[in-house]
Image 1 (cartoon, rainbow, N blue to C red):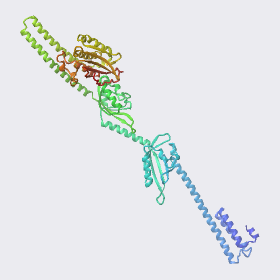
Image 2 (cartoon, one colour):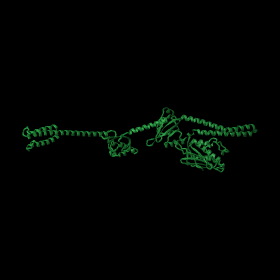
Image 3 (cartoon, rainbow, N blue to C red):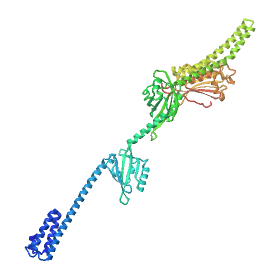
Image 4 (cartoon, rainbow, N blue to C red):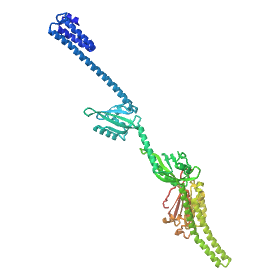
Length: 594
């Protein structure tokens, strides 16, 4: 450059300007020391070659000296500024690199933490979500803006939206528990929290929030709550053992205390998978009780002190009183029953013994009451015969009257004992299927000659096929008693009808007549022992026939009703024969007149 300027005969000022431009350019690329060395070389070149006198280091003019000094300071200053600018640029670049690295690390951390992270604008609309959202099948497109409301449970959307609106408007931190839907449609519980980021003036610039999965915690809390409620239920109705059943009423839990294990001989696992009626032993004896109990269970009603009989492990009978309440989940679905059981065998046996003693006393009182008059009459007749009979024939006549009176007393005693036997017998154990049509025809054949002699028409209509479970001999005795009463009280020229009907799964045995009938006020009393209505005072009998019928009907779990037709209609209502283990149903049936 010095050679070029020298050849061009450039003056000192021009050469200095050219040198300055070159030095500035070189300082942008070179180091500070190299720039300083070049500046010194340039000053020496200016002073030696271009400042007069030429080719001499001496400068004679003051302005030349000033120019060289200005030249020296100017590149030094420019070079220093350039060096500083380069340092600032390098620092800025390094800061930018650090910021980028921090951003990468922050994003990595956000995507790594076990929570759903989201960022919202000051107006509350979402503009960023981390990768954790993809694990439940959701992306920013599904949540951006206000679309996030659509992934919440429908029952909670309104409440959550209102809470978020209040937080955004007031600038207060947000916290709520809500259910979020994943891509497979399953809802899980999340704890949602958000904090606002403010600038120096206090204005919100961003909302930063997280959604933490608390489904397992929620389930644990629900399970604990259910467990707590279950044992609270147990505590509220503390008893000998606790149980739970499923929706099908079969036991899923059966906790029996140690003392009761020895008392009833039942293992805790022996009832699992069974329903209560699977091991009860009184189904056939009390079908109506079991029908009502099953109806309550199907209606999901609570029950208390339902008593039934079962067999212990050694085969002995035990009595159980159980209480339960239905259990539902949070959605209202029926889960089963939960309850307690009591071992009440001792109490029931004591009550049965007391009842038997009371019954024996009543029977004894009835026998004594009913026998007092005929025995007194026999005694009077024998005394009179002893005092007044003068011939053998008169004495025989008195003896015959006494024997007749004694026979009547024996008949009464036999009938009373028979009723007691039926009421307290174990003959249910011998129940079997009984075909009703042949049984009823046999009763009709027995009383047909008696009705014919009295000029009473006896009509029998019995289709084949109907059957019940019971004791054939006792059922025949009950029907025969009803037919006997009907023929006995029907006047000459009347009619008696014996029919077998089928009505809505039930079998009805109907005996109707055209006799005087039984008034409504007396229909309950006629089944009591020794009761005789005013209409039957002149008719031979003991007043025990309908008592016998009532005892037999009760033994079988059937029902009979008395109503008015032109005369009297009596109906025995019984279910069809069913498989063993299924409770029979007994219904009260009120026939229409006629």
